[in-house]
Image (tube, rainbow, N blue to C red; front, top):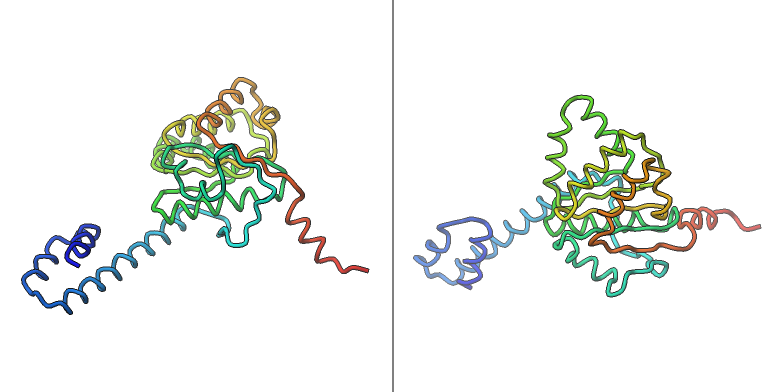
Length: 242
């Protein structure tokens, strides 16, 4: 028990509890103190998780309970279980979730983001168009540098729905700079309904698009989502059969 209690005190940064217990060699008291510290540690972890999830800005909370993945093609050596282990995040690698609308890309990105929060990582979720709008607002207000420094403190940036709304030249350049900041320093999850060859229609400039894609795909796991939209399928199932 002493070793367990010492480790708990180290985790909770309590310097003198072990010494006090050692001076009062009552087995029941030692067990009671250990249980008390376990409750404190678990409570702190729950509070930290709640704070990280709240700060991440997920539009909806999603988990992998009941998640269907038989329409997803993973790169060689990868799987959903491997992704959930977060080794890719520890290695500052990216995930690119590519496929048609409604095939579960945002669900996976969100669930992985929550899993990252559960493991103590700082995460931020943005729809790509929303992030560009924020970047333009910060640039106009003269606070862009401060905002980019805040983004640099993240361990995972999730960019959802890249490809749904085209960006202006200034917006494309601002987003490129954020992705360039992340390169080999932080992980990025991107969801997109467009193949890379179509991204020029969103970012406009061919050279900028090429440089942006190059930074994203280097050290990246690319997943392909196929099949019909789950949302459309569910809507069709609700229609009474005649």
